[in-house]
Length: 401
Ligand SMILES: *Cc1c(COP(=O)(O)O)cnc(C)c1O
Image (tube, rainbow, N blue to C red; front, side, top):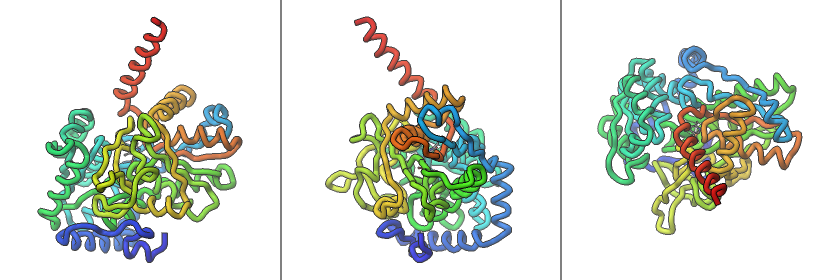
């Protein structure tokens, strides 16, 4: 995480800007604008007050004593599920929306898969009086109808994209096409620590508030550092946000990818991908022998992405962060345990991090770990209920036999 790496937009071999010439000027302008804003007390003060009063920060660091005891150690949850709109994505959305306004751009475009980033962006734009258009694959619009309605209620225009597999990929293409056609008025608000430089750095800095708070809260309470910090990894924004302030500490860091229905499948970009260029940056990418992007699957929609942030790619190679896999099944069982034992319904994405914490404490009894509880699980009720019913039907079948 040296300054030189950031100046060139590189994290080791990863990162950079692999974009059409027309976007290069906009990215350079964005880089300069962010650097200036980040040094400017007026901007930082407005961001801090927005995070406090609109987002609801600081979020608590909750000691999950009962579940920790069951699992054999001490479990602390960083409660991003308690933020406005219910996930960490709002930290980034309000920060970039403030930056866009400062740059004089009144029109925001974003793309969203499951809709969480779209909702966070729509809320941030409404708050600042910015025009907002969200691109979403037509299939995702059908699957995530309540989020589409939320975005519309928040005043955003939702653009349903046909073409391709009618999911995130086509939405990204359409959002970029929109941005290229009018980069002077339009700000492209990216939702994870991915994409061309400077986005991975901007998103990390905006999400680092999670780790800064967690580190301070933990040391104040326990008088020492935690043994481990654990977060799920889709594009990697909640993970890099909580890891960043711990990178120079003697603390074990674990990123957890989604294994889908078996550890060989799923969306494990760091475990099964190879370096390549996706969405404007070099990173690990899930691709076949011909370099075609391969399909991913996870029960957690926010983890269903064939790329991963460039900094995570470098942290994997350097060994500073260990990346692990949890499956749909282990994540679901962790979801149910947290719900019943602590009274908290976690997002299915966050449940992957919890499942790994259970494994880690089982192997390392007595340790103290922080899990980034990136979001709340209400959005996942339909898929959880479908699974639970399927399970009941299966068990019913066994009984009948
Ligand atoms: C989107 C999302 C994720 C995954 O995104 P990252 O950029 O990897 O953090 C994780 N958890 C929740 C609740 C999400 O909405």
